[in-house]
Image (tube, rainbow, N blue to C red; front, side):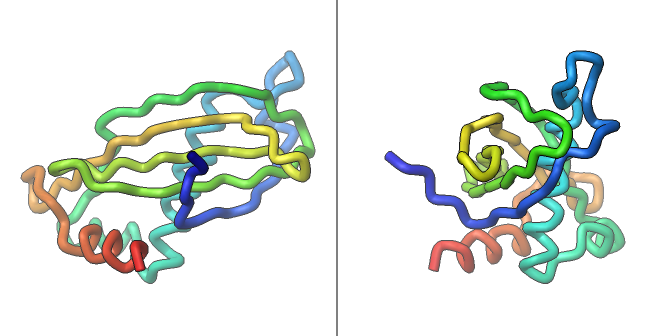
Length: 135
């Protein structure tokens, strides 16, 4: 079954993101998928900084990344995501594909929770966002 993504963004590998082997260092993939989540929020008129000012802090509770095909300096890629709610968690399924051949480079799952005024809770803003993206 094909994945249904709700957001995607294109990016390009920068030289300094590569290690001595000439491939993207594993830690940089986490930066890529975090940037994708932030841009997803921004595309939906949600400011990560504004959320914090309002006492809402979405945080990563668990992260699972499976590396498939390495990216190298200068490669262009597309980072895609979809999000689902699972109890109090918001689960982001995020995959990265090299362009133009769409070879899968990374499959990841990021479980997030919202800390609202110091307590873990569901977030009306995120719940509304999920219902908007199902239409």
